[in-house]
Image (cartoon, rainbow, N blue to C red; front, side, top):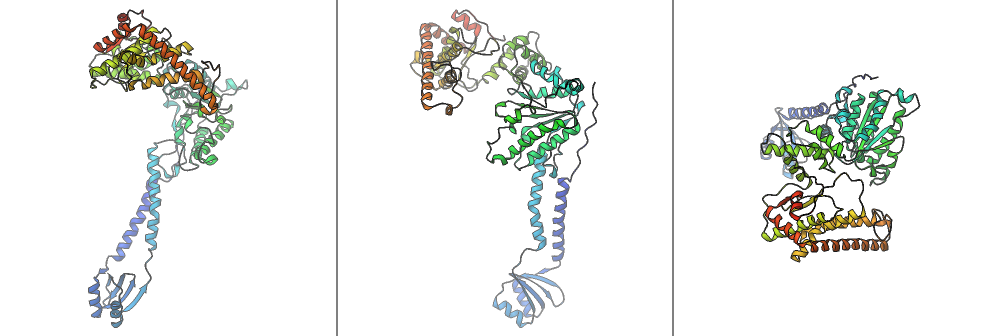
Length: 604
């Protein structure tokens, strides 16, 4: 049975910073007018004229304070002057019987002191006013000086969210887990009759771009309930206590709207392990986290139901108290989409573009392993941009191929010019990678090779996996190392030289070998995991690890060198053809070298 919700109450308005600012500015202006009116009819005379008037007995009285004087003529007019209180000056006054009054050096008048004291307050008010305005209009009433401790969460009413699970392609397992939350919000009696308790908090964990935020909105849309959305960084503030105050205000608002959903995006900004801050337990972030822990542990006992959804791509840095049952009871993994999910996501994003009839989204899905949902959306957009740039009537397969290459490697640098020697060196370097990739059966299928500069590279040889991988073998790891060393091996074999372009290749090969030894137990050291940091083992063990890494790299180097020597004719043919054509696809290379083709992911 669906529930009807009352419209959220409007936030109570407090003193507006603009009006408070105008009030104090008005006081200052009034003081200036008052001060000016007092001194408006005062005549200013020079020091020499003043002495002449004293000598002519025109001065009745004078008051001297420091180097200024204010006096009265015998006809009642008032004057002021800047004076030099010398012996001559005082003698002239006394000789002509002028009534003299002397004051100590001036201290600022109370009016001036009051106005100057207001200036820091005025600037502080301006600071808060503009800071709140930049923060946007959240539920805490942005733009108000006294709302700095209010929550910045945006409240979406039940009828404002149109997104449902139908709009979220893929992630079927995550949607199944979240359907329980929706069922509870729609029909809590179904669970309560058997004593079941719905999770108080659900943490969505996964890499960026896989749809965690979209899933949270879909839950609110399916449940037709109010939805509070806030980022973890919105709690963090330089003023101690403000973050905790915002947490209290957020959950106070949520209780008034229950049943509802509170969504905290990037919760790792406020939920990191305690004890790591410079301020220890008094650190502002830790106070905010403590308040969040308190609210999540206690709000479910209040009348109504508030469920917290949070998203992070760093669950490893979250405080353990935050992840215990009773707070975030359930952690739902939002993984990279598989082939079927990628096809669904492509269909969703393709609704808004014009595709040619020949475009097979299933083939594109198979050719984009490792792409996130955001990557796939970007792929379609880049293909649409390229098709528009070329004035095409619809988006063709070739546009997707170019867009994928741009995303994977980077855009082409068409104006960069090679010398003849540099072009030959680059061609043999990439040919070495490509040929070893073709000769080793445990590698990913070869995709394309080019010596057109792209991104940060002068040339690229790359392969794509045959499908979504869940694990890799030792043979696959060593094959990746051999292929990574292919460019260096080809340079030394043909030119007896080595370029700086092998830097990233060596880095990749060394990283794989070190993981094999330290993490996967794939060496003579045995099936032992030595941890991620060097402080988890002794110096002697570190030397043994380095020796094993060196041995793996050396064995792979010898294996790759042997293959290139045995297939030197193929290396020369591939490199020379690459110099002529600059770009070769997998099918062309298989035919050129007479090697039986493997499954490829060419979109054309």
